[in-house]
Image (cartoon, rainbow, N blue to C red; front, side, top):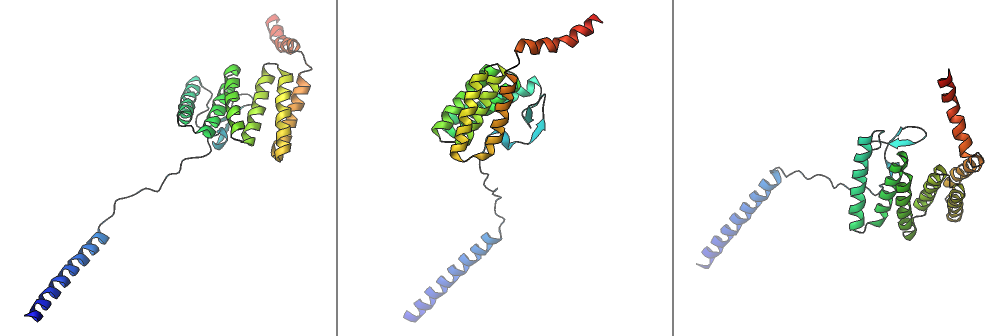
Length: 211
């Protein structure tokens, strides 16, 4: 009787093992659901990451957002503003700092210098706290550009001097030539009175009207 029971239990266990084996084979052959690869969130949120196209005047606009139309400006502002609000809400300060810089450059293209200056100052405060020296230097040069446009040449030179000293101290030599050129431009142009520049700009128009 004992041998009969052993034979029966052995047959049952072999049958169960065979069933699990067949189930494993079926599962292996069954098509698995598609799982897309993990999409990593971009860490660089600056305008520089986007491809460049030539824009109006000397400014270079960045595709796809920065296009020379009021609708495109409004759409770009809305996109960057929402991203900045999200990053500030969740305390992602480094990326929010770049969002503020993007907004500032967008306003600079529209000659909205007061708004651009405010956002650059916010970005600069964050970049200093985060020890992001490159971003701080870029913010200072942009601030100098705004102050140059509104005629605050001495304050613009102060920002550029600070940016230059920081670049030297941190070994960021790639910024030095650009800052030097910007300083030279300010020193040359601040010697020309703005009224004289406007007078020369209006002279051809007056002559054409007289003709």
